[in-house]
Length: 145
Image (cartoon, rainbow, N blue to C red; front, top):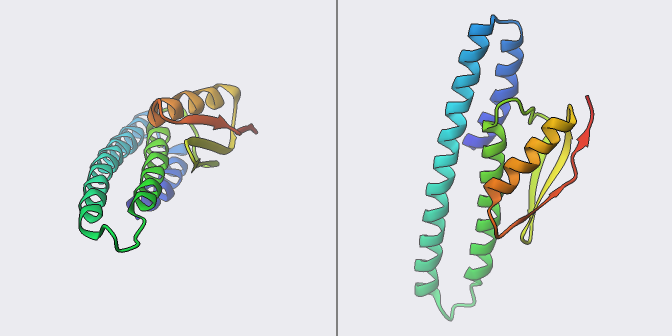
C-alpha cells in the first residue's frame, strides 16, 4: 500500500516540480530520494519477517498439506520485485513513470519504456544490483522519448 501511494505520488511531485525553481526542484528530489530509502528499509525488514514467519509456520504446520515452501518462494519473488522497484525509484535521473518490474522464477523482467538509452542502461544496472546474484535481469525496456 505504501509503495503504491509512493509510486503514484512521485510523478505528481515531479509534475509540480517542473514549474518550480531549481532550488525547489532539488528539495523535492531530495525528499523523494529520502522516501525511497525508507521504502528500501521497509522491504528489507518485511523480507526478514516473511522468512521468519514462514519458518515458524513450517515448523507448526508440518503434515497439514500446506505448501509453505511455495508460499515463501512467492513472498521472496514479491520482495525482490519490490526491492528492485524501490531501487529504481530512488535512482536520480531515471524516469520510472512508464517502467514495470516483474519476477518470473529467478528472472527480474524490466518492461515499459524510458526516454533515452542512458536511462535504459541505468535501469538495467540498478536492477541487477538490487536483484542480487541469484537473479538475472531481462531488460525489455523500449526507448521512447
